[in-house]
Amino acid sequence: MRTGVNSERGPGPQLAGLVWNSTRNMQAANALLVHIYKRKDPMLLGVGFVFHYIDTRGLFAKYKLHTSAEDLTRNRASRKDVIKFALIQQAAQCLLGYLMADDTEQLPSPQYAIAVWAQRLRYLETWFMQITGFHTTWTVYGLKLFEQTAPVVSQQDPLAGFLKNTSGTLLSATDTTISFTPREMLLAKAIYWILFPLGQYLLTMVLVDTFQYFTHRAFHVNNWLYKHIHSMHHDIYVPFAYGAFYNHPLETIPIDGIGFPFCLSLAGLDNRQAAFFGAIWTFKTVVDHCGYDFPYNPCNIVCPNSVLFHDLHHQTWGMKYNFSVYGAFWDWAMGTRWSPHDSKAQAKYQKGRATTEMVAAKARSKTQTTEPAIGESTATSL
Image 1 (spheres, helix red, strand yellow):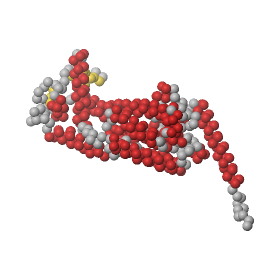
Image 2 (cartoon, one colour):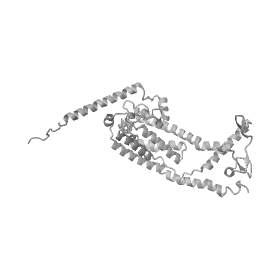
Image 3 (cartoon, one colour):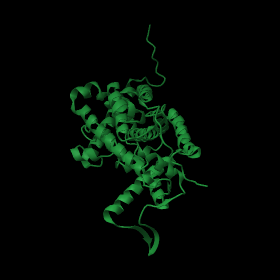
Image 4 (tube, one colour):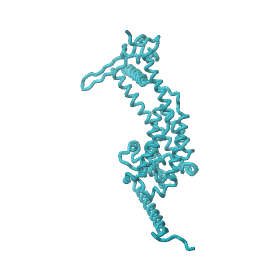
């Protein structure tokens, strides 16, 4: 009994179900993902709540970047207003994400996609042998593990046969089924599950970081844009987690609502990948504004001293530096990178803390002198 697929009848019902029933299941999953596509509110609320709890309980004080006096006196916007506006902004982005997401997206099953990659590898290997005349042989310590001088044709793989019958050009065999070698399937799985997604995410980071750097810098260089739009975000001089999304609507819509999703689409991310990348991006943005420089911060992998790097940008004397969101490449290339460990930067930090503490001490002293002494009557004589 043949295990191959007859090209006249097309794929058998079992194989068709393998490919397309799995696709329908993915469609059902995507219908749910559409509602969270490019939504960042769960990550904002979760991570933001953790840092808010740490702040209010006074935990991990040794990792805190700014003093309590700075927290109370330097910010122009209250935490209550920031949290309220950030939630409103996130609701608006959820709506945009829902309207812009492709709810008709159809994804093939992993088995089908892996077989497609195996087919591409077969094409590449055949072309390489035709051009060079070389044979492919893998040996380990002198032991020959695999040798191939021409594409193998057998009757063992109905999935590969389905690919042959639908594309019709892999080999000139008429009623046979193509069998991919274990090596081809191993490489195809590595490409599908690891290499290709990793390349997509790296490309997305490059695109988003480039877009964010130049738009962010434009909001600082152009006086009108900064005064009327971006200055709202910089009402927070001492950053805290929720402040990451305290932005003017005319900044949020074109950058987070349109430009960011466009970069994801340009990199070829599907709904699932975009939702995952959006969550990671939100995590880094919130952590960068948390106000704590914890050791082993995973964000330091892509940007050394990530929290300190962005905290410097929020200082009045550092607003013309450190515009990047992910890495520091564009700041380095454009001459706008300022290391937070630089001696001049540290001196400015120390001066700011000392000034704030002095103002706070004067305020406390003034309050104490105006308060009546204990037991002193405050009644006025009739």
